[in-house]
Length: 148
Image 1 (cartoon, rainbow, N blue to C red):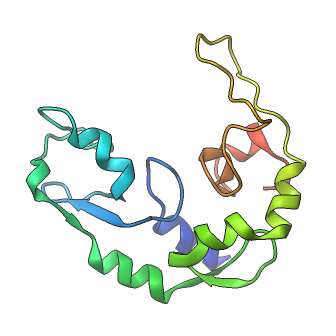
Image 2: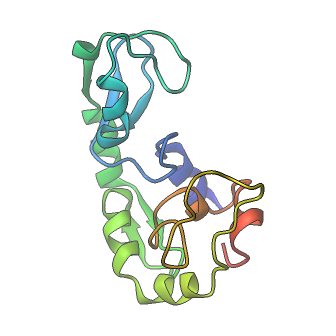
Image 3: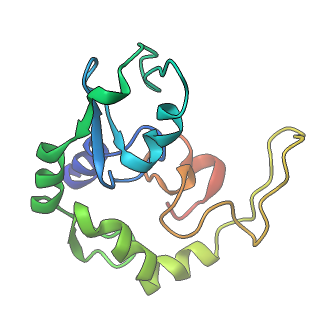
């Protein structure tokens, strides 16, 4: 429905979660979670993770207009269907018993091809409501969980 499209509109392209403390790159205008953009700010000549255009790290500002919208728009929780503001969705999902119950039925993470990277321990790569496996309605849902 319209709610999932609304949530997708406020999704960080790096972590694929609803923005958390969003920041915008001045030169291209792309928005990311502040924490997600941090690794890009540590290199001498940063590039936007989305469009690869160079940007000035001094011209990365809080996306206050996005934060205001996150606080005013509501979407249903994927577990219990409770309407929650997008700003509080991550916190709600991390404590929602229905989500935790559904995530317990997710298959263990298995790489598609052999990898030199260690396989995440604990049965899944991310906690409930974290990481790309969480995005409902996206291409990853077929690869990870049937309940999404």
